Image (cartoon, rainbow, N blue to C red; front, side, top):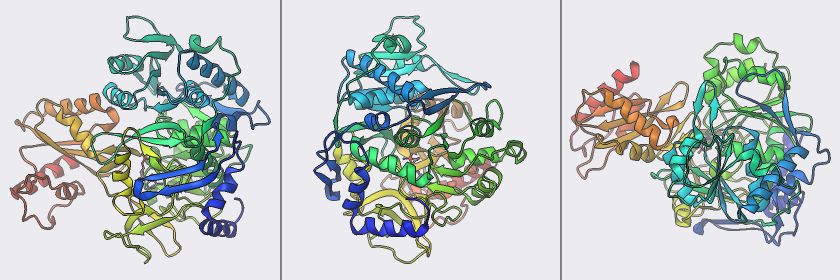
Length: 626
Ligand code: WT7
């Protein structure tokens, strides 16, 4: 879909009148070993949706066998440390390495349906490992390399992964993380049978067989027989946080995920074949899966794979990379924009940035200041901004203006993509039709890359997404629509907090803190944070309020249990929490305190001990200012 808003409107109407035909026509552009019999079936009361049923395909065939010029660059590989030269990998070279790695995995007994855990830095080996799994039908489950050994172990156990692919070390900026050491801690007693380690340094006995990444696959054949997958076979599991303490394994299936990520990449970004696309997300998150790996590769795009961070060796690094590779499409998170803004305009202004055509944002609502800065200082008022709303569960972008095609409005994600039917509901489950009214963001019809299940418990999938409003998928977000139907996302309405675009369940962080031997009880809520969007504040019951050293030690417990990214920004030690007579923590009050409220707390008559509210207000205010 190119060119005009009228074209969008026509296509949207067509998709609404006949979604099956709409998706069927798109899916026909892909390579299928066997055509599908039925385009879609779904029953939201059972939390079910299936696409291109009976069809057989493989996502890697759609990447590699459909490309005419195999010498086309798939990725520019930009390492952590600045190097003047450019390192590249072509589609042909990537395919050969994927095949070799796939052969090596097969030899070790990995095949269709086996789960493979990937815990790697932002290096090409991660892409090779992911695609090798897809080639042989193994189900990859990438764990973000910022998660701790304990968090990694939880995910390995839940997925019952057979092997893990990792690196000796991860380097980001000036920080070095001993990934292999963490893996050793995580895998003992799990289902892991062997590990493949990039730059393996063998220095001690380990519980499982280990292979050095290069030696594992370098002598393998460069051809490999494709495992033809049912459209509804799983492609990957990706863990994400929810309202409950335990992260859920979101499962995406082969056919639908392929069709949807390819379609949305092409249309939202309006990518053309000579463009250079850069998505700064980590492969450990869904954005990395869909718009760094699969979406761009399915469109035979040239992308940047950047190992480092935006501020190393200086806060001009992103802009230097844009100029170096003449990046045309730049896709990042509001938190990165806000943080780079704080270093001033002179830094980006000292770069050309003339190659840029389209800017994108994802992960959290973008505030007006950050949007304007992005548009003016980075885009020079010359680049449309696509504010893309989606979720791990949606697999791909659902609501976003398409670059340069539809009207865009600062801080509004925009219109739904063709084939996507959002609806705003009130508490009672009735549709909100008046403009500018907040409601729960739900969907009445599936799309090809919609979550299929939560790994190990379909019941959990039904409960989480399909039980709040009968007959609808509920996103967990509140949103409103303007007079033109453009959506503005307000944010999560469940116990999920969004810190720098990373998702955490409050219960998940509380569980972690409660493991600290001196913590009796804790309650976590989000609070508005100028850079991170939301910060984490924890109210923690301990027996010695004077012992300030506890704060650091509680933070380090969270680091051990989940990872440094989940450490609370503020910890407030207290001897009590606002509870009802029946012992339930009134989180509503804590949220208000965290929003900076000092006087109006609504009805507090059911509180067992009302004085605690003002104590916590005082404690929060004094901490927050400091
Ligand atoms: C939650 C999903 C989708 C990839 C990154 C996050 C929030 C996401 C936007 C946006 C406002 C956004 C929502 C959503 N979110 N994109 N453009 N504007 N909010 O994936 O970790 O699954 O988190 O991120 O609250 O529910 P995720």
